[in-house]
Amino acid sequence: MNNTGNAVGSTSPLDLQDNAITLDQLINSDAIEVTSRIGKKLKGIAALQNIITSLDLGSFTFSDTASGLSGTTDGQYFRVPQGADSEISFIYYINTNGSAVEVAKLPGNTSVLLDDLEGLKDDITGLNLAISKVVSDVYITPQTFGDDITGIIVGLHKGLLSTESVIPNLEGNGYAKAAIKHYNDSYGSYEVITVSNGLGINKVNNSDVTPDGVQSRVSIKELKETYGVSAMINCDAFTSASGGNWQTSTLAKPVGLHIANGVAYQSFGINSAVDAPLSSDTISLVMGKDGAFFVARKEDNKTAQDYVNDGAVFSVGYGPLLVDGGEVNDISDTEKYDAVFNKTISARNIIGQKSTGEIIIIQVDGKTGEFGITGNTMGELAVKYGCQIAIGMDGGGSTQCYWQNAYSHPSTDSTPRSVCGGLAITVDNVAEFDSGSVPVTLSNGYKPISSSRNGVEIRQKGDLIYLFLNVTGALSTSAWSQISDAIPLRYRSESADFMKGVAIGSNGALVSLSTDSNSFVLSAKTSMSNSNILGTITWPHKWS
Image (tube, rainbow, N blue to C red; front, side):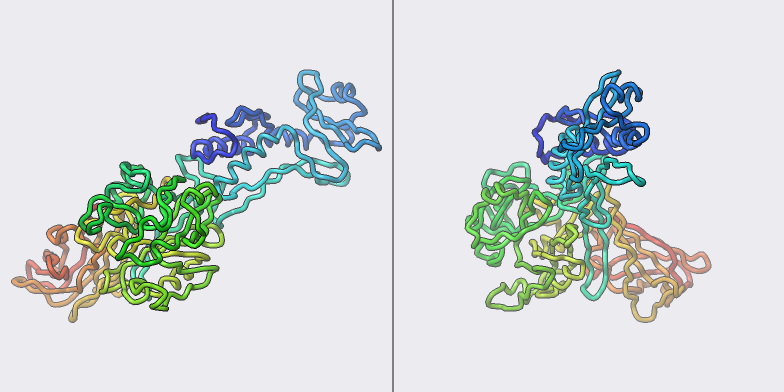
C-alpha cells in the first residue's frame, strides 16, 4: 500500500491503486477485516459470508444476546428479534471472545447500510469518480434465501465502459486497457488506437513549461521517454512563442484552450494564430474527471480555470467538431469552415469517444496536398469506429505516435516534427505495434511464386521493418531490375542505404535487393541465371 494520507475522493493514481487493492482484498481474500488506505477497518466478503452462513432460523436466531453467545462460538454471527412494535426487525451480532458485538440492524422491508461498510462506500465513491464509474456503488439489501431465511448480500454495480473494461488492473498503473491496430481500406492507411476509458490518457507539457503554456518544442519520442509512458501522440496546434515562423521556432505556445493534467494554462482568445483555422481557438473537447469528453466553446465565456474548477483534466482541439451525437457534423461549408479541413487532403489526427466510454484515436497517413483525407470523410471514419463525439487534432506532418519503442505513425517530414506537448497513453503493458502484412504492388512482368501470398509484403513490428519476397520474373546478373512500386513512406528507414539485403533464388542463386534513394522503388539483381526471389529482409524503422 502507498498510504499517501490523501482525503477521500482523491484521484491520485497511488490512491486509486490502494483503493483497488483494498477492494480486491475485501472481495477475494479470506480476511474477515481489511484496513482501508485511510485506516478504516472494513468487513470483507468473508465476514458477510459468515453472516449468511450463520443466518439459519433454527440455529442462529435467539431471544436475547445471552442466548446467542451461549449458542455460538467465537467469530460466528447470530441475530436477535426486536419485537413487533420496533422499527428494527433484527439486530445482528458477532460473537467476539464471548462478547456480543453489534454489526448490523435490519428493518422490515427496506434496504439498510451496514455501519462497518460506510468506509468502504466512501472509498468506492471516490474510486468511482476517478475510474469513470467502473464501480458505482456498494449497497446492502435484504434478499430471501430458501423459504424463510433473510440474508444480507453486497451488490457491486459496475458501470462498465466497454465489454473489455474491468476493475483496475493492479499491475503497475494499469487502470485501463489500450490497443492499436493498423488498417488499409477505402479510407487509406491508418491506425486506430483504443483506450478503454479516460483514465488511460492525459495531456502533458514539456518539462520547461511556463504558467501560460510556453514551452520548448520536442519530439513525441522525447516526451514519451520523459514521462515514461507507453505511448505519446501529438495533439494541439501551436505558434512561435516569439511571434516568428512556427516551423523554425524552438519555443512554442499552444493555440486556443490549453489544459493539461488538471492545470489551466491558457483560455480561449489568448493566442489565436493568424495562419491557424478559426476552430483552433473556438472549440475543444475537454476530458472531465468522470472520464467523459464534453465540448468547450469560446462562446461559453469560461476561462481555462473555470473548466478546471468544474473538473476538467485536459483539453484537446485544433479542428472543427467532426462528430456530434453519433452523427457526422457537416463541415463542407467553405464559408463556415476552413479550407484546410474541407478542401485540402492531408494526414489526419482524430480523437473521439464511444457511448461505452472508450477513447478512439485515428491517425490517417497523408501528406498535405498529395494524399490523405479531408472534409466529412474524417467524421465518417470516426463514426465507423463508434464515436459519439469527435474532433480533429493537429494533423499534417504533425500527425505522429510513438508507441512503446517505435513510431507507429511517423511524420511525413524529413525528420520527426517537434511539437508543443502531447497526449500520453498511461496504460501499462501495451502490446508491441504490429502493422500486419501490407502488399506492395509488383512491377509489370512479375508475379507471386505462390498464390497464397502477395509477391511483396511489408510489415512493421516494433522498431523493425520486414520485407517478405515471393516473386518470380525476369532477373539480370548485370543490371538492376525494378520489381515493385515504391516502398510506402511510413515503412522507410532514415536512409535507403539501410533498405538493402540478400534473398535466395533458384539453383542456389543469391539475389541482391536494393531500394533507390530517390524513388524508393525496390530493385533486384541475381548472382546467376535465375528468375525467383524468396526470403525476408529487415531494416530499422526511421527515427526509432
